[in-house]
Length: 183
Image 1 (spheres, rainbow, N blue to C red):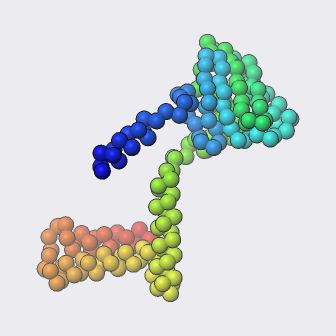
Image 2: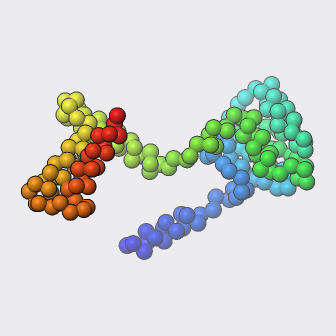
Image 3: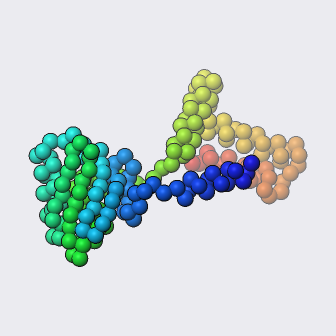
């Protein structure tokens, strides 16, 4: 069974999307679709269904950079085709200009957060809410975990006589650290 899971994971990791431009993308915000010397096609939902005067402003801002010839926007597909002099301007610079003009700098600076991380955080919040409601507002998930670690530490120290490391002493330390972290 573990071999099947390994093969599935390996095939998913090696799966190519067909959009290998070497430029960073933000799925759902700005994706580099195709790059050739002197041509760069980007796709962004931000460019869909916007007025012509906004198109002109975006194109004008992009073409202000020396070496960029044109920036053509297709409002139906949300596509942007930038033509430039490849000997004077690097595609990474063109991509950076588009990011800047569309106001996506902060989105690219943020660390990406995976779906699994978001789901675990959502589960933790739901569990926290459930513990809070079940205890009538007396405890939350964090305080119940602190109490559990404290009880386990006392059990290991007092009942089992275990004063070794790692053991009850570590559990007491972890309880202390958890209480300090909340302040």
